[in-house]
Image (cartoon, rainbow, N blue to C red; front, side):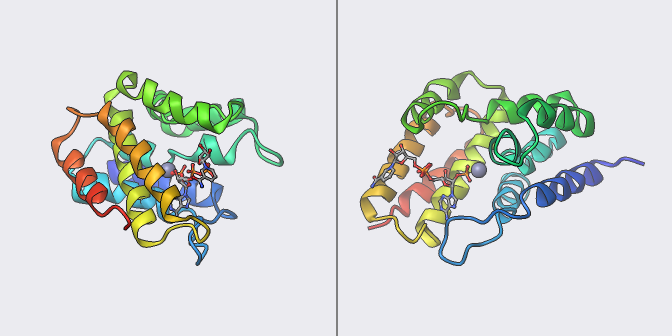
Amino acid sequence: METALGRVIDAIAFAAHAHRQQKRKDPDGTPYINHPIALVRILSVEAGVQDVDVLCAAALHDYLEDCCGGKDQPSLEKGRNELAQRFGPVVLSLVEAVTDDKTLPKEERKRLQIEHAAHIPEGAKLVKLADKIANLRDIARTPPADWEVDRKHKYFDWASQVVARLRGTHAALEAKFDEALAARPG
Ligand code: NDP
Ligand code: ZN
């Protein structure tokens, strides 16, 4: 029998397998899956979000971007089909809404995140808020080893521009973001 909890655990297990060879950029090379789990935790434990499609999308939010379409990876089309088949069309649409187009230059991708943020589905806005909270916390506590303070500041500034377009979505999450923003590295 498929329960709500079972669906979320399945999404985490699927993401854990898909990201199994990837690490975060912190000096310890933390397993990548800790980041999607952090998003699920921020949404469910910290913000009380109960929408199972949103929690599954949080677990899977970096799957298409980081596990599909690259060398020795399934194609993006195969990845999309896999998500739709296993987790349904709503989860697929949420994950697609938070997936960057990796064929574009990085600066352009950053600009498009700001431009698109206001126009994505509500559930995708929740995932994006949690993603930015998690990444600001990571940069404050366990940043990539080679980032000077200026680069950290640029990330904080860009994240707050994205989140400015997401305001009015979820007050508690926005307050968590503001808390993370206030811990700006000195
Ligand atoms: P990003 O600035 O995009 O790197 C941050 C991303 O890395 C996060 O969004 C997160 O993505 C992921 N990540 C993994 N581990 C960590 C961690 N421990 N802490 C925080 N984030 C983590 O880096 P890019 O290399 O993609 O560079 C993009 C931009 O930075 C470009 O616009 C480029 O011009 C600029 N740049 C600036 C420099 C400077 O200011 N000195 C130097 C070089 C580049 P996710 O949630 O997807 O995992
Ligand atoms: Zn992420």
